[in-house]
Length: 309
Image 1 (cartoon, rainbow, N blue to C red):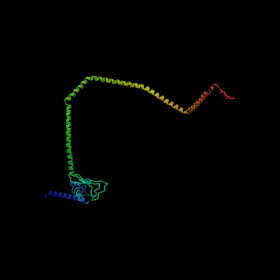
Image 2: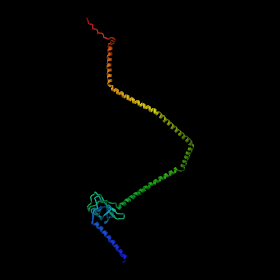
Image 3: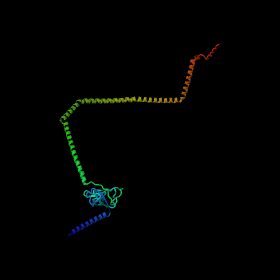
Image 4: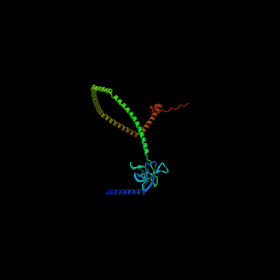
């Protein structure tokens, strides 16, 4: 054996010993400080003993056994071990997962809630079913069938739209054909002739409108001047009228104050007038009964009543 072969065999042996030591230490660490748990699924998805157990995406243990559950054969019992101190809680959920696209199946456990109670060793972890490949294939087949129906329906609608588009193009061709073009050309020629004939008249009308506009502007300016001239006298008259009204208002106020001040005198005057009226009434009655009182100062003596003899 050559020296190179001996060196190669020695190096290979060293690598083998190193790998064995590392694997042994890792297994010893996992086995020596692990806690057992179990969970139940209806679909294992190719999960095998030795598969990784992930807690929040971190490898924390191994699957120890995968078998039908004796109490309910419709479920698969999965036993596993995780590192001691892994915070599994009542809100943690176990489900099938993949560490990568090319890797084998693994058991993934969610972190749950920090406020939830910790699961004791040997207890069951709540699980969540994952869709199997058959279910996914069935859903894809259903989607494909729906897509085929949709394509057929869309094809029919597209054919109808195509027919309508062809009819529209045919109508457009009819509308824009030579006869229509000839009519449009004739109308344009007529318009050009009309513009050429009536152009001077339109110009004269435009000049008249401009002149009328200027005259209207002058009239408006004159009206504005007239209004300005009349505004000042009217404003002065209004001021005088306002002053007169103010003086009349003041005079009425003074009269009201005077009437209130002489109210008692008015009452006395009214009483004197009433007394005078009564006296005049008495004088009138007296004159009616004895009119001679106006002539005689003394009244005649009363006649004695003749006595019978």
